[in-house]
Length: 461
Image (cartoon, rainbow, N blue to C red; front, side, top):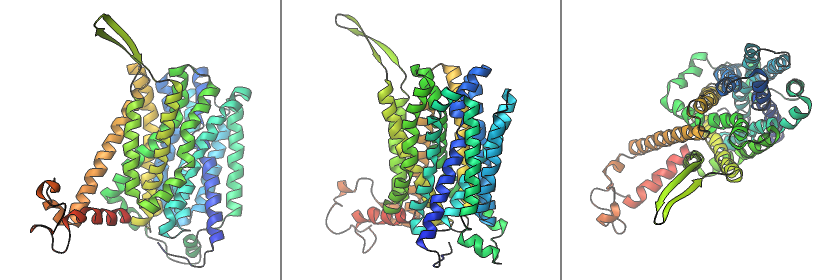
């Protein structure tokens, strides 16, 4: 990435702050169907599968568009691209208030989904203002814009009082105002500014070259869980609370915030942790905790009958609202760390193609946010078990953890071939102390090989 020493710290901070506010507004509009969709489902008599399709449609558009928006942002600058996207999404949100049939709602949702594609433009815009050793923290702060989903959940109180049409129009006007302010009060990033002065743009073929690498797709699969599943649950949890626990719309929206809020606010902390301790370590922690929480959340209410000494003993295992909210809070927290950790990799490995690579990763992650609500609804319809959505998430995160670990081990062996010859249990062969054995590489203590290597690889990723 080209450094620009003439850029002041104040300019960096202003660009980051403005981008974060803009992305927050975009994310709120992008996930608006998590609340107003409940009332629309009731008015139209939709099934849970149809409801899942409705809330997932804007996620589909926002996901697919991220790749193309990222490429446009690399070529023309994130400021112009992001402003244009917000204006289009605001117009679609206002048009939504005039929809009456299910196809009309789907059409409006499809265009509104462009608000989610703004993430790719924002990543390209923010990353160009900061040196690469600070991009983890900067992009983590920008990613706090996912707080928009929490604001959307709070709008459930407005919907109860004024109706879903008013909610849609309020957000349409708010997003249009943010689009105008963002365009007027920000400036082009340093690279876009130099291109406008005549500097050569990166050829499109060069931008797309990085997308052929398996590593990019691996990052995308990680993001399909940490972001895609986050978005899916943010959309699905209000419906889950209403169906599984019989709560009101306002209470369900409030409790859903306990999940989405940490996933937004603490993303900046995840960026800082990735800068300090390495993105890979944060990914291991994210997947490990997520496996535990999704396993616990996936256990359905079950009644047991045990044949005791004095006769049958009956008891029921069930999770109440309070422990459920706590576990989803923890899940959202570590997902936020994982979101920041995934995007920490991109400016380091692909500094000249942040928009295109980040767009692809965001696209796959967002597609997870589209497909999962539909899968949640279908599984609820087919199985009749509310916790089936967490069963699916447990399988997804377990697969991501396995792929990451195998990739890490393969990378270690490729960089230090001597690791292939290490015994599985070195302490059983007296390798814990004293001089290294004959098969150890000269000048390297065997017990120090893996920690030394791991530190270096983590620093790189």
